[in-house]
Image (cartoon, rainbow, N blue to C red; front, side, top):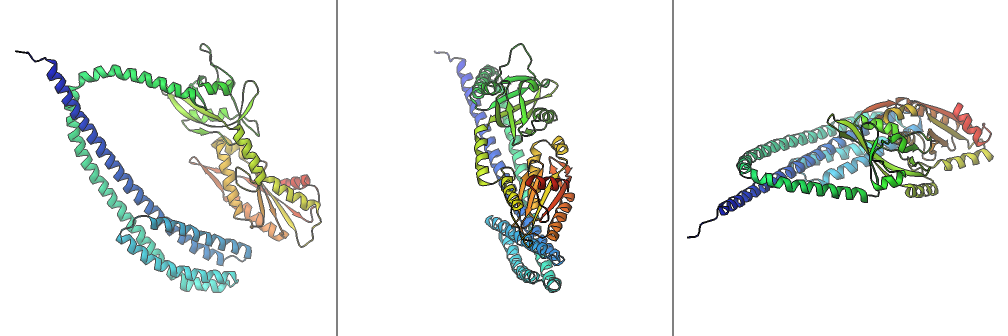
Length: 500
């Protein structure tokens, strides 16, 4: 009689355990996927509805405040600016409303929304009447209309918005309760699957030992693939140890830096690579490494360049991330650089041709400079005066030291938008010399130019840059030159505005 091999039950038992383990893993993966997708959908939908409802509520509140503010303005230019701001809020509300209506709404939400729409239409009709009186310079009539007719409608409408927010909050609470129920079910499933996994784990311990060798081989292969990938990248990858020494360069980094690491020699990063501000020629590497040592990510500013050991200069963009290295979890750094010399040259040419500053999107300085020079050389009539304002930002070095180079681009963009709100559509605003802004006030009498300059000073005194959880005050100086009576060259005008 043929004896059964002892390997047969072992193979069968091992196969059965693998099948059970596969079923456990697949079931757990499926349940986890379903749970994650449901929670994600619920949270995203509810959060988006709540955010949009709150936004529409705030927009209508701001529109009402804008009308009240407009009735207090005696200057027609300022009142027109406020009315434009009032209409801009209406366009923002329409965008938010369309996004809200595109979401799936249940019966209670639709009912609440329909009641609000009725109130909104009434408020909009009365608001337009107020705007007409404001544009006709009937301020007292506009104030009376706001107090007697618009205010009660506004209160009724805001009560509807509050009801919609309440409905959304209740929906959010229900979503959380549903999440808790799903989480409880998931825990129960996990307990059952975990018990089965423990039993199976005891049985497959021997298998795990055998597979560990295979995993080591796979890990080695993965490391080789990663190395091949790094070697094939068209970006420079530079790893720096906690002592500030370069400990790895991929082939493209060796090409870009024109340097190879020596196996037996240290190579300090500050000596091997020069990352500079293209305009000021100040080093960007030291502040970047300082941020990385503080466990902060860092990004090079838009005017960064790399100077190689042979004196070659490349326009680059890049970023850095901190690395935890060694048993003591010291901070190293990983820096990735990309050569964008050709792309940046094309951008400069295109921006120059289009007359647009690439950082702020404002009119290029050369356009303003040409207009100002033409006005100084030409003969202007007394009824067509020009005003020139030079806004200097005085503490850029302090902001750069506190928040890094990247913050300056954001600062110029934000202040550019702030200045645009305080000048007329016919005026020209441009970034000046990486230190401030120039404003050409066309057909602007001296009294109006003075008012605009004072308004800009007040706005800048109240402005602070919010960057990486820091609040950085901004100090600025506003100089003004009126043409006529001023006469002279463009250089004289800029110097006069700088010292005014």
